[in-house]
Amino acid sequence: MDFEVVIGLEVHLQLATKSKIFCSSSASFGGEPNEYIDPVTFGLPGALPVLNYKVLEYGIKMGLALNCEINRFNRFARKHYFYPDLPKGYQISQFEEPLCERGRLDLFINGGWRSIGIKRIHMEEDAGKNIHDSRTGSSLIDLNRAGVGLLEIVSEPDIRSPEEAGFYLKAVRQIARYLEISDGNMEEGSLRCDANISLRPAGTLQFGTRTEIKNLNSFKNVEKALEYEIARQHKILKEGGKVVQETMTFDTSNLTTRPLRSKEESSDYRYFPDPDLPPLVLEESLIESIRQELPSLPNERLKTLTEGFGLSEYDALVLTAEKASVDFFQAVFDVCNNAKLASNWITSELFGRLNKEGKELKDSPITALALGQLISLITDEVISGKMAKSVFDEMYETGESPDKIVEKKGLRQLDNEDDLLKLITKILDANVDQLATYFGGKDRVFGFFVGEVMKETKGSANPKKVNELLKREIEKRR
Ligand code: ADP
Ligand code: MG
Image (tube, rainbow, N blue to C red; front, top):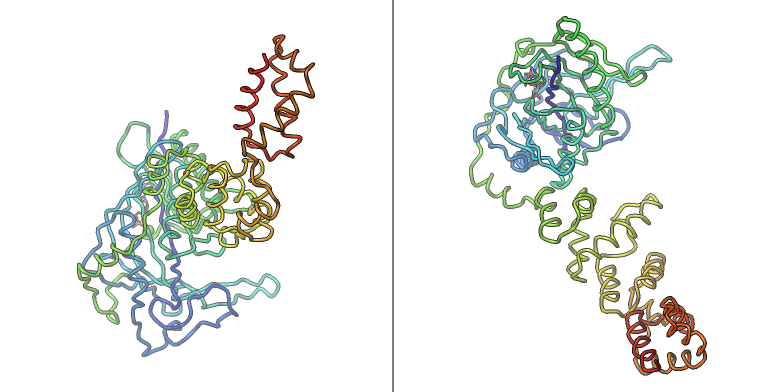
């Protein structure tokens, strides 16, 4: 029997706010253990939470970017569980009245579009970190992360393969980075993912029993864990067994999943509205003003590059991967008005060079203006494409403008007709034998003459002009 894979992801996105979600301690990553703590983070008696407006703003931004309905009535709820890294014994989260619901994320995968439903997005606080010291056998607790603002983004079970899960996750990260609400850095834990997965007989509608793999912390691990879990569930079902609904962990040392605990029901958490935080009633005008601030998002920019500028899907994907790249492309285009050349020079020359040196676009010694000017010099036939490469290298090293480098090095393409004519006459006079061979039917000899002109001008002659003039002058002598 064939099985269909059903996956739903719960993504935790750590928000890049200055302070935590309910107090003024810093929300920075790093820092000495327990440097960013205070009575609210500790949950000391009498300490009261106050919502950080930025968390709400960022949550609304993400909700709008994922085509969600923003709920006008919001409430925070206490979710109880007992871990040493959760000082209050509960996490402030949202339960029945989350910030966003019923959204959609459209993914461009291998040349086609796939739409994944977004079930909900809610705001919550992060927990601290347990650090197990294997040397002493003791556990230490760092509360720097406790109380940092998170968005939990829950997809519908619309994902159909580990590969698609990877695309979904990367798209969420990309949007968060376009919105500048999170760096989405999985290594540092600002993007974490729980993956729910089940199988069902192909062609049926009812979902099978799922397992949930907790805390996947890299794109690769998400795909690997899902692949392993698919194979495991597949084997059970094929042998007529039943998948047990449970919470699993992924062991990165041998790439297998194993049970962590039986799945908790929401009643286990004893949710109730947090009495310390009043319900949040959002005005339509607030949502609208945030909508006005949204930047143009990856899919829209992808369409502009492919449909508007006629770039290949591949190049458009490279350029839209980061907002900074596509903004850079647009700025180069605004100067040179040639999308193909702008795309080529950015993706091959500039990115190639930056990658080699482990640098990012923001460290580029070549500005968008300068690269646009360089491309204009090519399209205006002031310099050849080949010379442009050496000008580019010089620009990269010195940060000088292309004009200045072209002047300084005398690279301006030779296209003065009188000068070229004089040279061509001289070369034709000196090579009567070759000319005879050419007239005898050996067309290849034309290349010899072009080569001579280029040699004499040290490659600075405008090749188009040289071709034109050579043809004309040779025909005159036939
Ligand atoms: P819970 O409240 O138990 O966490 P939710 O309904 O909120 O469950 O779903 C959590 C995640 O699990 C969502 O991403 C959802 O898409 C996914 N999910 C739900 N049912 C299944 C299933 N049968 N197979 C795979 N994923 C599922
Ligand atoms: Mg859940």
